Amino acid sequence: MPATVNGIVASAKGEPVSLRQVTVPDPGPGEVVVAVQACGVCHTDLHYRDGAINDDFPFLLGHEAAGLVDTVGDGVTNVAPGDYVILAWRAPCGVCRSCRRGRPWYCFDSANAAQPMTLDDGTKLSPALGIGAFAEKTLVAAGQAVKIDPAARPEAAGLIGCGIMAGFGAAVKNGGVGRGDSVAVIGCGGVGNAAIAASSVAGARMIIAVDIDDRKLDWAKGFGATHIVNSSGTDPVEAIRALTDGNGADVVIEAVGRPETYRQAFFARDLAGTLVQVGVPDPSMKIELDLIEVFGRGGALKSSWYGDCLPTRDFPMLIDLYLTGRLDLDGFVSETIGLDQVEEAFARMERGEVLRSVVVI
Ligand code: APR
Ligand code: ZN
Ligand code: ZN
Image (cartoon, rainbow, N blue to C red):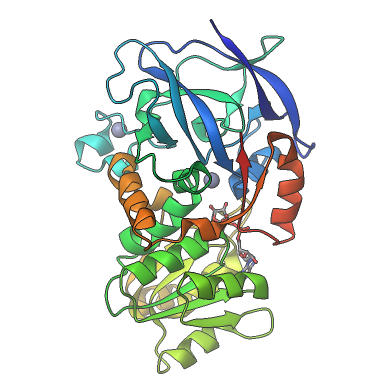
């Protein structure tokens, strides 16, 4: 029997989101229905509401979630009803040209549920990042459900599904941060602070947190930043150079998604250093750089898609770090809220008052 559940829907560009009745079909072949327990409010949900991702309204928002497998469709072998899972927005297909090149973390044809979830009048919903987890239940491809240790509480575990994994992977996978490196992170929201926590776990010797908001910098210290720079009144490039014997950092992570912060990250690197852009820009943004600087400074300019993660490999790894006290996921949970409080949580996010508001169902 299809289920009728409460879900948070963005109906039109820029309009406040609302609680609606959502019909979740029984899982078809290769699909699973997950009873959502917790789902973080990510900046990307707000981008969907504001029409900055695409115009496929109405959206069923939410994509940073943990929950229990409710029912499974034919042919599903990776999970069973009752399993505790984190939802991933990457489920490698195994056969696209990237998977065949042995790079499933870039899979170009990641799996999503084949059937739509709908409003009660039959209107098809577009689930945010193929998930749609601000809902009591959601339908996903089985490969999107990644089984983890039930000892991790859902409010913390769910965050691994997007922001934590993106920031952590940006540092240690894209940036290759390792023992003894100097790292600067520009933008210390959920993603930037996850990059700071990752750099600390990986053994970086210096971790410079840059933000325009002192509250974020305070949190950054808690996640392992060794130095902080408030760039609202100081040139962060000069400050990072001053802290690194005039050289710049080995790895700079841009976790804002703006041209000016990309430029800062570019110039704040040491020679042959690495820039990792994990902040998502608006499609209208442009950057101009002297080509001789791009050549002359060498190194690597990378963008990070979901931290190059392979969810089945990396989610359990992050859970182990959490459960053994080496990754403070609880520190990212600023508040827990009900399903009907997502719109207020967007406002708190915009005012910079939270790292993550987490919907608990
Ligand atoms: N310089 C430095 N920091 C800045 C600047 C700036 N010019 N502008 C904004 N910031 C800081 C904010 O103060 C905030 O702490 O960047 C941080 C952004 O954090 P969040 O809004 O919490 O976003 P987050 O979830 O961390 O995501 C960061 O990555 O996934 C993408 O779409 C996401 O583009 C966003 C980025
Ligand atoms: Zn693939
Ligand atoms: Zn997200």
